[in-house]
Amino acid sequence: MNKIAGLFVVISSFMTAQQQMSLLDCEKAFQTNNLQLLAQQYNINMADADILQAKIWDLPQLSGQINAYNPEGKKMFDVGHAKGAQVTQLIHMGGKKKNEIAFAKSNKELAQLQFSQLLVDLKTQLHTTYYNLYFQKLKLENINKQLGYMKELLSAYKVQSAKGNVSLKDEVRLQSIVIQLNNDKVEINKNILDVEQNLKVLTGITEDIEPELSEAEAREILATQPIGDEEDLKRKALENNADYQYNMKLIDNSKLYAQWQKSLNVPDINVGAGWDQNGGTFRNEINLMVGIPLPLWKSNQGNVEKANYAIQQNQKNAEYQKLNLETKVQSLYRTWKNQYDQLAEIKATDLNNLDLVYNGMLNNFRKGNVSLIEFTDFMESYRQTALQIYDMKNDIIQSAEQLNQLVQTKIFY
Image (cartoon, rainbow, N blue to C red; front, side):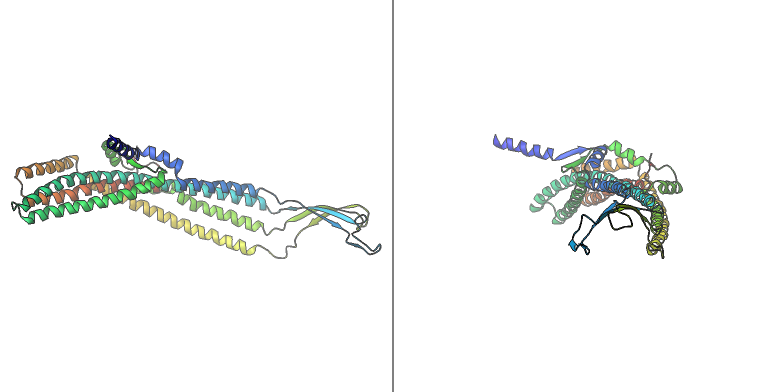
């Protein structure tokens, strides 16, 4: 009884260690739990803090003076007869604070674009990982189906080989197919473990995720095509790609920074008021104080030139990013098109015929109508074809997701 209960516990723990989730479920978990996304959000919060800091003026300064030594009365710290106080405030001129605030606001826009790009990149990783896991599971299921039959067949041939009823050569031929299938299984399982690990990091879910995707849904996804030709996709990418928009915004940002640095050459004014008990012309006199640096040279000229060079640098970087984005869109679109056309040549009837021939070969081999050489040759060809078809389907979806990552607006319908 205890053994049966223990068995139920094992089965129950295995079942709870897996979650069947749709892609939408994974996206919701990703938006809630992804640590990279949550950490990047703080850059926007810090940019808000920089804007707040830029709006704060310098504190007024209070200074005072007392007598240290009275030579007439020969008295130390004659506070009762000689003391004074001043209050001064630094007044920024030349629009320094306005330029500093504008630059801080521009930095926030950059932080928002960086967040948007990270969101797109991670979401693309989530989609490609999810679909990759789906097709790896299908490959594993197919390999296990073949492996189950071939292992049974190999066991039977080993018995007959030991009795001398079949040749050792036939046994070795079957053994080589089983070894190859086992190698495929090991490689696929390794891929599944890698993909599952990535999916856990992306979603924040520690249990293994089982893709909830029907065959009909997968066919519908594979059948979708982008609206527009290469030029349309390039134009949409330039309008929506957050990484490219970041580089364009960086030009404006560097111009605002240069304007701020230029304004720092304008002298600021110190304005204040002072009270002096006995040290001035009058007793208890109140004085107005104004101080300004002498603008004999531009004290911030080096930073101004550096900022101007940054503008030119960012303009060149934006030109590079534009060319890079356009060529990537072109390359990915053509890659997707070639893969799509290649799969389109394989009709549904061809896939059905492949399964029919597979089942027919199994039945005919059992009945002795097919030789071992013919059977093993077919099984090797079927193994390769089945895996290639899954890879073709996976590659199409991967290319489509990467194209979405570049264009960053809905293009597949």
